[in-house]
Length: 507
Image (cartoon, rainbow, N blue to C red; front, side):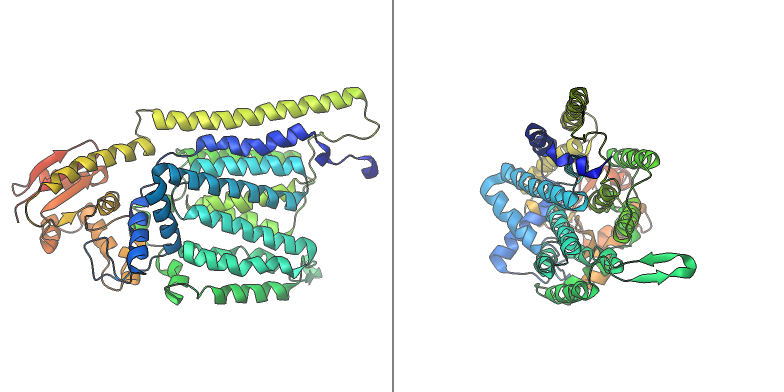
């Protein structure tokens, strides 16, 4: 086709563009109207910081001498003020607003990559649907995703224009990320690497490898250095910057946090990933004229590897991996463009295809929303139902504890501790897994001790006597502990629910 006669795909009707723009908004129907379990330690942490300043020792669990770093202090404060003033509705609205910012930025980024309105819109919609279904909850990560997309947009804008002013946003992004979610701060530099590699000129004729620089290297290195220096502007200094090095890669953590495990293809997230990869493979098989470049190849391969390593990292593939694929198919027009010589029949066919695609996209959004609604309304053991039931049973246990005489020394595990802390108690452990590692707290490896207690590696009575627990709460992941206590004459079962149970012994 003669390019000068080809009408840009951006000439699509305004109503089509409007519909594409509204579909991400429609996906708000998929938002989870509940609090994530981590919120129950994020909120009291934000409250503590507002009232007392930045803590250096733990104030939530029973280990008051344990050193801590609040890796998401700014997010905690935002969550505290939001929930304190507006409750659950305010928190859900905050997540929804952050998602809309993400949806806007991800489209801008994809369109900058491809300059193809249709391809950018469809790929952005896929990213939006995946992210709101699986990752947008009341946790610090929602801000991380926005900041990472903003970084990638700035890097790509610099690559396209060569203007270093676009890199000026990266130091503020570094500042925000180190204070909102410092364990993910290193990702700022991980996503700079493909651009740094792409900026290096390569000419190796013997192996037929040649690469022209995508941009100037020095501004990238200077920006990286400034962003690194900006990282020191946080309450915990170098410890916060290195937090990721002492917080991941431990068996005790991965065994308790499902999102740290590789994706299970029996889960919704795993199935969606398989479908997404399958669609990408089919398109690549039939469309072999796609564009390739070093930075996008590295981003696709790198983030796909991260996605296959852990559920938590899958979000980065949905951002950068799908973005790289957008570049590959940026010239794919799905036969929607036409020439000035096109007949009326051609134009009608084009409009019909547009309508059919719109219907398909609307059906996708509707199916996702329906699936989400069914999941939250079903009586099955979905996470939403399970969490709600567990917290309702914990409320009944709290009523029992409130009537207790004398001091309470409370054992609660990884899944239940934070809800007890939210209600003013100081249990043995909670969901802040990395803080209970000796490498972080400098005192004792409580995560390993917790895992040994659950697994029966240590004698249960020795553990209980060590801390003189007189109240023990077990959940469904600690059935072996409950079985031991059921057969121990020293313990009395005060409450038994489907999710949690409460045991008592006289001190």
